[in-house]
Amino acid sequence: MLKKLKIITMILIIASIIVGCQAVEEEFETKMGDEPNINIRFEDESVESIALEEYVAGVVAGEMKPAWPTNAYAAQAIKARTFTMKHMEGVDDNTISARHEEAQAYKPENITDVIREAVEMTRGQVAVYDGTYINAWFHSSAAGRTTSAQAGLAFKEGEPPYVKSVESPDDLAPEDIQNWDIEISKAQVLEALRETGEEGDEILELNILEQDDTGRITQIEIVHNRGSKQLHGAEFRTVIGPDNLKSTMVETIEDRGESFGFIGSGWGHGVGMSQWGAKKLAQEGESPEDIIKYYFEGVEIEKRWN
Image (cartoon, rainbow, N blue to C red):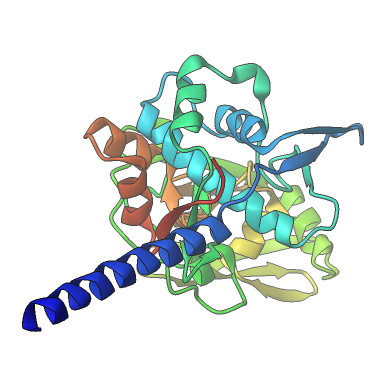
């Protein structure tokens, strides 16, 4: 009798394991779907519909330099795919701009065999936090340390729990990214001031009021002949032009008569993954997943289609 009970017990255990495995498999399958298509809108307003993985390859080719390590490209592919999927949640027609100012740079003419390999090895993979697509922020160089979304982007929706400030190995970046002296004319500053709705005829001073612990400007004052205007550093960079002011990690601003000299370092908003840092980590043997998890706290990499 005891032997029969043991046999029955073993059968029940095996059955429960099988049922459990089937449940896990079914739950995994609910996360899987077909590869979506995406509609790319170009500057001439023409639209092209392509498979998302092909779009991701064009983004990696547009956002990263040639001849970089496969794992750096692969980390960028996961970020690009995540960015795209999160974007598509907010649009009805799966359309995304090809302009990097509006979304991500897209340059399919720059795709190489190594980039295709990196995209294929991460096919369908996205970064999520509690099952939800993260804000897949990335930038060129953090100049040694990344920052918060509120400091780097003037992000107003509350600091995401997965964003963290970490040391970033950006020493492979060119010298003109690591250290720069940029001149911006007072006429440009006046034009930027007017874009904010503030009226003025002459720029008198630029004053750094606050910086975060990474050295990025969080409050700047524009003094003009009719008063003054305070802006978040990220907002100031936006109205001046992100390509004109490489980052808000500014050590000092000098009045040079008809222009201001900005002395600083880095390129981009400094939030999330640094691309030059990713290159260094990839060269040191880090996997694409490890690179992303280095820059983002508590995220998981999930495969959403085969």
